[in-house]
Length: 260
Image 1 (cartoon, rainbow, N blue to C red):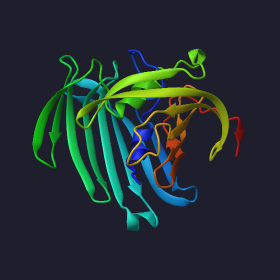
Image 2 (image 1 turned 120 degrees about the horizontal axis):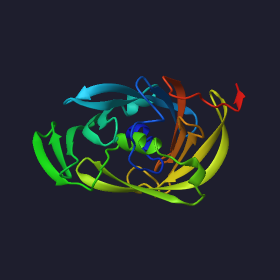
Image 3 (image 1 turned 90 degrees about the vertical axis):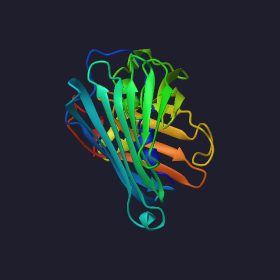
């Protein structure tokens, strides 16, 4: 079981277009998720945080995602992952991406620099001490910036059940075409109360981790924040669920139908 899911799943959202400034999030936003395995066993935690900083004299959002195992699972499969994305505050396109993971002894330490103008990705594999250059699609996203880029441009009024969204992202050493299907609205019970949500089905690659292409389901709040509230994944062995446990620094009021 890969806690990579915790960070990666939160990526899969929404329609897109160029933005003048982020409207759904901002400096100081922070999320914490709790993970459970097969519905009852505590598996781990993850956090996502946003800061406004300068990178090479550019105004950027620096997002840091961390994931780690807890409880009994860490004695059998210890995970400690860190993801970082530096993306432009205005265009929301990434300049730099870091993936530093240790998943049961499987490790990677990658730093990717994006040249958006020339459609290139410069991949520095720090573990294996290699450097490679790859061609990318125009306006390419990384696996973290994609979530924030698309989250900001969701047009709730124009979503139709069954409609699909596609986006290009660069992951590790390849361009990845992502497809997401909108499943409709659903009201769910959470730690914060009863929440109106939008429900999605991301398509993933079946194989070593996921049971089939339609193994993921996710729910985001139906408000201006578009919080990732819940993610469920059917794995080849068991299932994984992530629930938003805590948050701070929201840009808009959090709409709750019924308080707990």
